Image 1: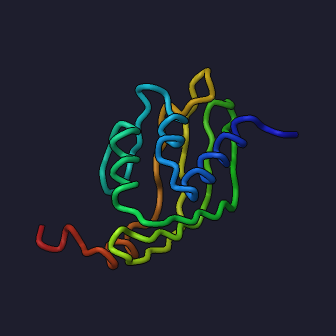
Image 2: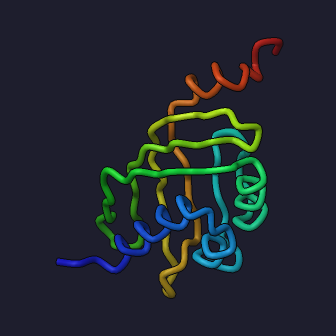
Length: 129
């Protein structure tokens, strides 16, 4: 059975790979936001604009898309091949957890991944804390 919300989540990952920041932002509700391990809670537009400015290429491979029991949440498990604007590459697996509004827009997206490999690549921001 086809699930409309699963299709929306898959479309999000496709747009991430395409680098279509405006199309990604349009998938979020007006007051939609992102919870990021590095940036904290940020409204969707500034988050994705910052991501777009920091990136030169992205390839996301989706392993699973799951819809929550209440039907208003979903998650995508993915591998992210990310080329930063400076040309360096990062590769990691993560899970994006979405909540939906009644118009099939994302109210929120929470990003989950092991930050240790990324900290090793970009530096441990807590080393001198």
